[in-house]
Length: 559
Image (cartoon, rainbow, N blue to C red; front, side):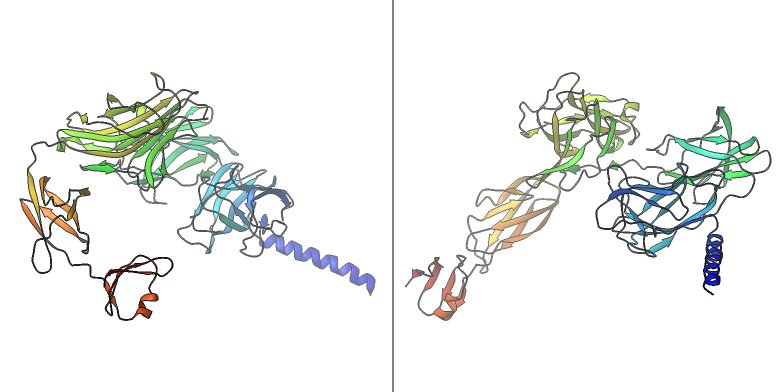
């Protein structure tokens, strides 16, 4: 019986393994062999269920889906990813489970032999397990499966239950290196061409097409693609320019002479609506760069950023230690100048370190033919003079009034930071204000009638209008333009009054100030319980207490 038992168990195990393998097709990875604990991101390897050695870079294993799972990190150096060893037999269809680990949304690619074959996302779905669905690959031969986020800034994603079928059938053409031109910053006057590398499968490539539309998975338009050189096919004509905000979706389709075919994954781009602004325009950089647009022509690691010092925000650029020629732009939203005349720009700048000469500078330009996004080098720019700081140490210097020439076009105004490798200078820009300089605008007087509760005038109150504080008793404010302004009236011994006033003509604002009467206390015991914060209390029993010092000594205003 012992011998029979020893023979039976291996056969049963073999049948179970065979059944398990067939239930998952070609391969199945559940990360049971992954030995990765703790909350730190690590590099390493483990033996996959397929028998190959899987490699992970800057990953964690402390989140689960069905038992063990692997998590891609965010903003890791190098970028987090994991991939299989070489797996024979190709792949027909691949799928997996995934989950958004934290608050940042998922945007992850799956690649076969370094070609993107699928992408998964999430939308504010932290902790929700999702299925990728089936990605049809139809790739023959040896394969390597890889998972990596679209960008290093995309959210952490947990992956489990990777399953794929083998490829069984004639080999269709292979589609690789799908590229659109331009790659980004596509505006409503820009058309787009697409190229792809197509290699033959079991038969020669018969024809290649681009299918595109403005809804995902709906491709109502076809453009033929022709062989450009070697294996590269390019669209015979561009995808036409589209309206602002339109998203274009497209796939590349290739067919062999034997009737086999392949379709790439879906690609897309969205037409950017360049920012334009009404006047007046103001940006004080309190929280971020606002609507200003940044573009780095040269220098990949340095660019305009938002920075803070003692609660004061500003735009900041410093090419220090980049080792590159820095050509970086900070661009104000477009101004539709046909609606305005006599436009004036003001701002403040400060700097420290470095040098300034013909090859190292911060300059100001305007353009009438810039598209609003993309490389400023493609447009014509005219320099504008402004008052440059005379010394460093981050001393703020007003620009003076910079006149923007009248135009019938949309005008963009940009700061260009340009520095050769060497003595880079740090520049700051703040308090940008663009408005019509209308010296002939109507102005009015605003009179504040300050009275007490009995209706008697209160002299020498301090008035603040639109952030400007006037001398005590200056109740008539002259040369106020039309608009709505915030005001505040203060007087020692009275409660402060605040409100808004709309000025459309000479205006009088009646402000009633109520007296700040000390709080009454009835007993000395109650007085002793009050905090030592200098507050005046009125003791109705004997006297008025002005304050109490740290030793609880009472000081009397009167007996």
